Image (cartoon, rainbow over all chains, first blue to last red; front, side, top):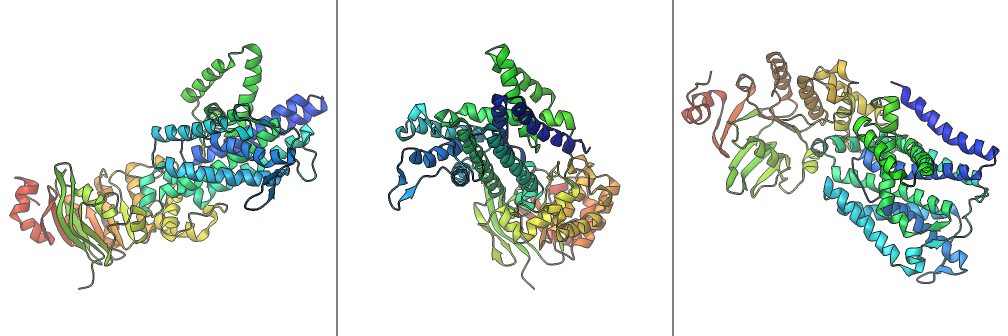
Length: 327
Length: 251
């Protein structure tokens, strides 16, 4: 049963090989698609911490994706307009530096997840799904009615933000950056799953009453996981905004939440590389089926239905079989 | 006499018109097994819920080692030294036997908020866990997911987890439920030893086991304790005979 690491290796190498080949064949559009896969996979790695490890079915992760995206705009827009970010209580300039923007996105995503999670985790089951959805939609309508950042139209950041030592406007270099961040997130998610925290969280998912009786509060475990999850998804949001050089409320809409969840389910809930496989499959289907019919999402729906009914472990589960307990 | 390890004073709880626990008082002293018996629906599980903290009483107190813990939640009482087993096995099915018991050690010691090191690389955690697994006779099953265990093995795993908590008191809810005669006998031997580590409040339907193990027995009927005493006293009590066992005589 050691097939899964091998499959993971193949997937991650493919994700690297495709844009390299595309670059050689002078197909920058494919490079951009691969970047989109890496970034959506990162968002999925974030959701998978809540959904896969913590068993929290959040239909509001667009909130964190969007918070990350808007954090990019909030920090970068003042630079583009030659204005300070704020003048009171201290004068603060905006920034076009990705590391700083990422830091801002991670902090904002974590705080957002702390607030939303603290309230949502008082419920469970279908109520949890509905309340996370409601919080996500709340932020969506807030963004629509927020004129400072373009309201419904969103806001464009014309020049992609910079990263020390890289030319981020070069598609391949920006891909490499997103790919590196994804690898780092996968490594952290892997360590998290096998850590004492991951063990306690798995316990809280499978037998919450038992975990409480062992002296560990399931609520605190789940809230912590939700915060980590929101932070990672917000980081993906900041990258996604930089990929498009554009932020709009659609990043916050429940369609986005659904998209992130669909790609995690496609790839395999709770499987480390599930979001990567799922994001790749999702983008591939979008372009293959999208070329055949504009109703491609109907066929995506059929495939999703098939996976939920017949392949519970998603793509990874189908290829690698039942998850082995990490010993 | 020293302070009881666990003490329940005048506990009341009602669900609508049903007085599920109606003025129950009992103590658990160091070194003893105190069995709680009673017919189905007598309120045994409710009482365990009140002691463990998953239910909060309308009136009355739960005290551990002389401290009032009535206002504390399940996790706080566990950390204060209360280990419980569940009537229906509650173990994490996708985690291995070893992982389940490591989780129990972790719960008792703290340190569940470490994010980056491997739980199973922590020798002090795994060694303690392994010792308890071996003790309940699950050594060959360490690496098996708990969900794949047979029923009797799962009951042993519950016990190993309770042991790994190094508790000051055990509350065991029908540890022999659904076990065959051999399993029940082995479990009896295990529990017999255990009372020296921490006293046990034992809810059990297997009367052979109860009479063999208990230092004291309390009989719960319709939310009230109608009799409490040694095995011989309970056997001889007419009220117990009629209320609990009907026409059938105790062995």
